[in-house]
Image 1 (cartoon, rainbow, N blue to C red):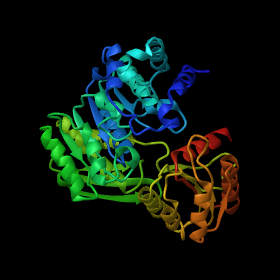
Image 2: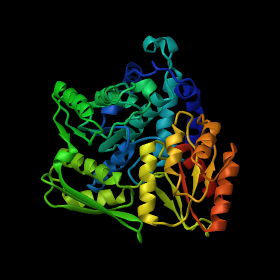
Image 3: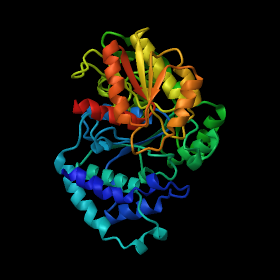
Image 4: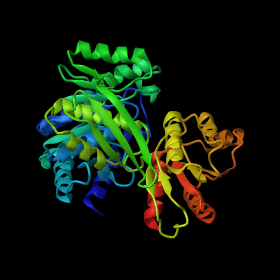
Length: 447
């Protein structure tokens, strides 16, 4: 076993939120207590904080890649990971060295094991995410990073990452999500996300669904004396076009902040990525106003994320499948965007769908999106780590009049989807859950 494997086993004892979700499991005094035990590693390097319901992972990766392209040693903290835990705590385009991961594990575990439970704030147990966040802080200090980019885990105000003191914050589009923890309206959720806004620290805000959400974010910024910028007011012109041959997306950005326009060829696909690229470019120009736009272009072009419209071709034993597209989209809006990108890149080519989702998703509306696009749908569970409701999925796809096959055994269904797609020469889209994407990637790697 590697050091990371041992570390993950040790972390499993702290999986309290995943095993028994509680509305009152969020607070900052525990992570503050833990960081003080390690001489506040979160303050080691200047950093960027990114929140939002959609696109925050893409924006985080893009900002990190731009900073790296500018010559900085950059640490990137984000979630979830698809196949390797180190995806959460890494450099923009590769992992940290094994020496850093191992050194930090040896630093962290004995200290945490020595904590007397009664000494913890309110005697509350430490959570898994708090420990992983602390581990990221320590890894980046040990790696002597020049900059760190932190993606919020959930919400913002009471997220464990919110102990940092960033140079700039980004708040992406806000949707109804995790309503049991963040609130049952967009405005309540916006208030939680706005909790990352710090005193006198600039914040870049993406376009929002409603004016009320913008008002919540604006008022929070004003209360904190934080300069705020709505990205749509700073980008004078933007456009994009898919390149079917290269499977990339060409974007064009113009802003008064730029010395010249940015024309980049993105590996990250989907029309939402032009907004994410705009957010990243504006954020970096605000903290590094003299940075040349060519550096921004190169950084944007190097950015990519596993499991976000990831195209896998020429799979061993399945080379009759033109391509497998892996996308962790799990909301109605994000799955709609995934299908839109699929159509723009592959036109009317025949596609099969492998689908699974968590139990809390509204499969009825999602199934209607799939009604006319897919030759056949394979419905299953997203793996063993996430609760699902296969009966609900079957009912929804049946009501939509879709030709589908369902089986709770996800490993069997993954293989069948691949076998049938190879036999028919169809594309295969895998979506609905990052957990399903993870299982499919493991299947591909095992072939």
